[in-house]
Length: 534
Image (cartoon, rainbow, N blue to C red):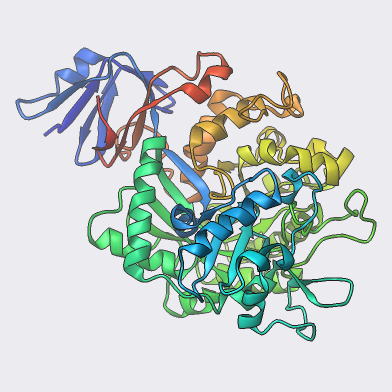
């Protein structure tokens, strides 16, 4: 029996034989037929819902292929210091939150970015101490690779001038060698282990709230890079039939041993929640200048960034994961990190070939690929490595890019060259580093401009702009392939999951300047309207 017929629409199917249709028939949460209105309506019975799309555009559901779901949900309740224009605004917001907490309560916030401040200097504990003498403060930077804490947090964590830098991290120090309140990369763990954990019920409640916002933005799924608590909460929502976004859960490297020993493999789960890849970090990020570089940062001749994991360490983990049925995805932002990761994957691919395994069986990824050396640009396609990229990073980061990478920027944040060379590309946001709202990512991909129009009509390195079709495929088919679901996700054709988005304008045929004003009318997953309706 046909449950629903959607008709009188402009439906992007991504089907080779019929790229556009006016109607689709849905049964059991899947598309069972597509075509013209009369043909689909002829399939309806007395029990079929007939829903008129009113001529609107319908696209396959959009998947964010890289975000931090628990963190995205949690910041809805944290101190908002996201891209504040100067340091004092952040300090004032910390003071306001501290006044409402009992002594000893943690003030946690996210989103400051020193490059937006007049002096572009990193803050210190001395900025926070006057307004929070009795409250430990922990503020993540926008990149989440630098962390600003106060003296109380350092005291609770036992961080002194004698505390050594941890592997893959650095404690900021003043001219006298005392901790200055800045922590970089893995040094944040020294404080995080002392922070009170959220309960599982609290995490699930925050996720449920965030899910509503994601569905309203047109998202129908995501690939999550947070830790085990995120998986636990997602399972709780799934057990209650409250998970209405399709989630691929990556496994961070501290837990890969337990995952392998328990027998987990890529794709374990169902179409709502399934296991993805081993995830690890090669380097840091651009904002705190910890991304690992082949040549120094402009104006910092001694700074090549931070190596979070060596090539040897990454190879050993990736090789073990591959032998046990798990692909690997590695965060790499600087060109040195990208090269090291490609070298790792080249060795692992050789081992897989010796076992008779194809790239389709181990869907390795590089997360971000923000800067790549000209000698390495073709290696992702050659090795069958997915470029998991975030179009919105190109526009949010370009001023810092110009400042710190200079003439190297033509190959920065560049999915254009990867597509041209034949690599598979999957798009996301890295939320909450940037907004998960896919229309802003789509706008960035096709214009290479910020939402305020900067840096001008042509965008930043306009030759790297994408077409609308390439961009939508990155959020649909590219993400589906990365999840091992390309046979049922990322298109609207028979047998595919009925995940779709109804838009208030035809984004393929309107001026790009109107994209940001295009409303999401309705979002469907599994054949059910989860937001809006028609």
